[in-house]
Image (cartoon, rainbow, N blue to C red; front, side):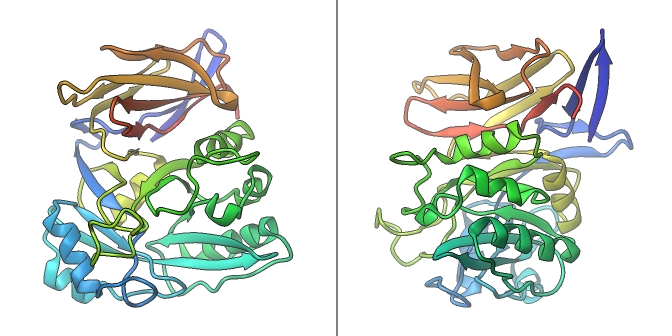
Length: 334
């Protein structure tokens, strides 16, 4: 849930749907955490394992939900849910990776949930292909994710402005060759996210495995599972509730750090980390243009909103290189 709140002339758009350990919606429903992966491949496209094997792995690793996103293919999930699904314990959600290209650059987007099969639309430039693909995906009524923008340096910050209408942007994709960290004159994926937010585009950051390989879990060069995920806050483990939470930004993204609470009020953003000793942690609060507003190295991890930040998001990092990202709270009229 988001709401605009005026305080002394300051207008805030606050994402009240930010995750929490527990809580209640206005209707009285208790909210819970659900861990899931939104980008997964099987033998139905270029994965190395059957859908059954892939689903079994994620369930055995205590994930709550999994989205199958084969390239330009919708892998059926009803039989998989009949075999592996369990109420409030595990759910398989249908998806598709709409796999496009333009000017010899890749343009890939996930449709999470939704209806039908969406064909890649193409275009003269990556920006045009992105705009056309998003337009084609919107009638399918799912959640749209722009995937690994730095894969083969496919999408620039300017290109991404054509992705307005997408709900998500992959800021941490665990595939080994997608250039999350940027390079040369190309910014990292987090900076690309900030460029969209600074331009006034509401898009939420996700982390995913982009799993292709179960057979070589020891290989550093393999696109293996279990490296990046999201944790969604929702009342029930159903496709409808998970997709609704994704559309509102009621989740955080992680490569290993677990958050036990995130609170966003008109005056403050705060994060609680489930700390593992002797690991050390810090939290950066980040605003318009990717500017670091404050870095906090011990509890409480919180930031008091001044009103001129444009937006505020938090990034938790630990001494072993793991991270977690919360979704932005927008400050001011939009």
